[in-house]
Image (cartoon, rainbow, N blue to C red; front, top):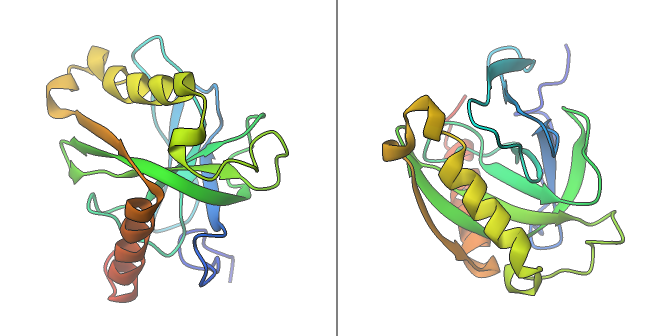
Length: 180
């Protein structure tokens, strides 16, 4: 039986140290890939309509179920784009709350603990301010030319404590059988 990236990757008990992040979209991509939940394969959702690209490696935390019905999203800050379906050890730093046409859509923000240029960061406030501006701007702009911007509300960044609570809630939802 092949491994399924949503269900078969262990998440450690100490999520403050790191979580596994399964990358769906490499930093710099204009392609919006999503995991196909029944098969575990990647599916091309769309090519971005706007002249923007993903500012970080983008994926999900396995064995989670977020408010939008998908695994919990995570942005992995590091030096290089990562191939889709790569597992990256990522330390959560904080997050941002979005609401789109599917409801609540948290984005956890973290750093690759195996990248020496980013591994030392412990909070979102410690990141260079421009990185946070880029992340915020991307999520405000990427659906504009699709005519969906009126359905996207990007909230303020939140800290590590709230990010860990969001991860815990999404893990509990998964453990209750939601998202399977």
